[in-house]
Every structure is written in structure tokens, then in C-alpha cells.
Image 1 (tube, rainbow, N blue to C red):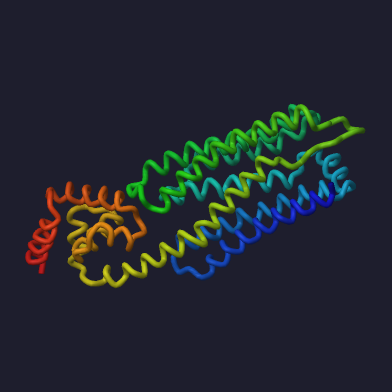
Image 2 (image 1 turned 120 degrees about the vertical axis):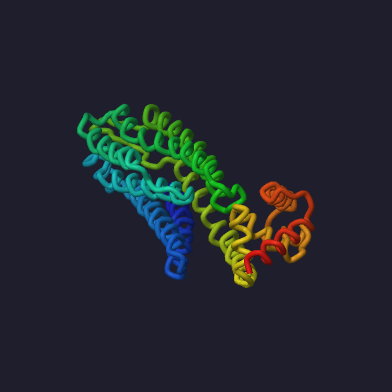
Length: 319
């Protein structure tokens, strides 16, 4: 059993470490301050995944450490408060930043309330209900984040952006695992763990939480290894086009086009068809058509040729 536990913990550490390395590696390469901040917070987030797993693995592999850990801190050490505080803050910060918002005062209040709760609960006698109440706010916070993430995603103007896509995934993950972690805690704490002082036996690992962390890492890996390189490539391809003329930017601003609509309209002015535009921007043809429809609506036109006429007139009037 010790060997299986060791191999399992080694696998988790490898997954967490690789994802953390990818985050910190890109942090020091970027000139974009916003992305640097996001990657740095992600790196810290995954660093505390490693820290938490190391503590839990020590309780599983070394019985003497488990006895000291569970007896002295009654299964609720100060280190857990630190880990949950950092994780909760990182999750909240990432959700608000991807939604182009800032953390609000009442959200800081929620974080401080959880810290205070986790600091007060251990003062009571160690029993199943006490331990359950200790962890409960963190699972409820995860469910709250699911609702907040969905709200932030709906507030984004560009529904096809990477931020929108990842916020949708995060909302689902937070919601599903907020409940599954809570359900596992409810069963293990009340039916498996033993909190009698002379015969204490506590399972410090929550396997639903491990799965949550693995999926979170895989989602981040997908961004670092697939979506982010594609995004950089697209921006590199668009850079020459965006610098062709300032009159195009003025034209797009005049009709209040979104960033994605600007990119598509730029390709339209180059007389590209829908499939060519989709290939350049890594979008589906259906998405391109939807954006073109919005462009037509904003410009009050019905045919592609009318864009060229509008742009020519706008250019002549503003030269």
C-alpha cells in the first residue's frame, strides 16, 4: 500500500510541477504585463498544489508524521489555512482578471471571513462535525466561484475569445467539483475517519480534490501548449495587417466593431472568403459568418461589396 501511495503521489507531483514550470517559464518571457501577472498567479497556484500534496503524502507514507500532524493539530493545521487562502485568492483573482474585472471589497470580505472561520473552528473539540465545518466554507466558495465565473463570461463582449472559452470551462469545473468534494468530505469525515484521541485515524486526502487539481492542470497545459501558441501565431500574422493603415482602425472604430470583428473586417477588406478568414483566425466558418452578419448590421449593409464602397468613401473623406 505504501508503494502505491508513493507512486500516486509521485504522479501528482509530476503533473503539478510540469504545469507550474510552464506557467513560470512564460512569466519571465512575456512583455505583456497582464499576461505576466496571470501566468505568475497560475504558477503560485500550482506551487501550492505541490505544497499541499507533499503534506498529505507525508501523512500517508510516514505514520509517525501522521500521528504528530493529526494529534497536535487535530487534523486542522495552520498550514491548511495558508494553503486554502492562497488557492481561494488565486482562483478569485484569475476569474476576475479573465473577466476584465477587479476583485471587489465584499469579495475580499468573503476571503477574510473564511480565514477567520478556519482559525476559530479548531478551538472547539475535535470531532467529525467540527472538521466538517472547518472545510465547508472552501467548498461553498468553489460553488460561488462557479456562479461568478459564469456571470463574468456573460459580461464579455467577444464570446469567441479565449477568455470566454476558458471561463466557461472553469465555471463547469468549479460547479461540479464544488459539490463532489463536499460530498466526499461528508462521507469520509462522518463514516470513515476516527477522531477519538487514543485511536485517531484520519484520511487527509480528498480524491475528488485531486481530480479537480489534475483537470485544472490539464486545462492550463492545454492553454500553454496549444491555445497560447496559436494565439501568438495569429497575432504575428495580424501584426503587418494592423499596421497597414491607421485609416482602417478609424473605420473600425467609427462603426464600433469589437476586436474580433475588426480582425474579420480587415480580412474582408483583403477580399478573402469565409473559409480563408476562418483558417487565418482559427475559427469555424459558422463563427465567421456570425461575426460578418454583426458587421453588416452595424454598417447597415447587406452585401460584401458594400463594405468596399463604405471603406472607400470613409477613406476619401478622412484623408
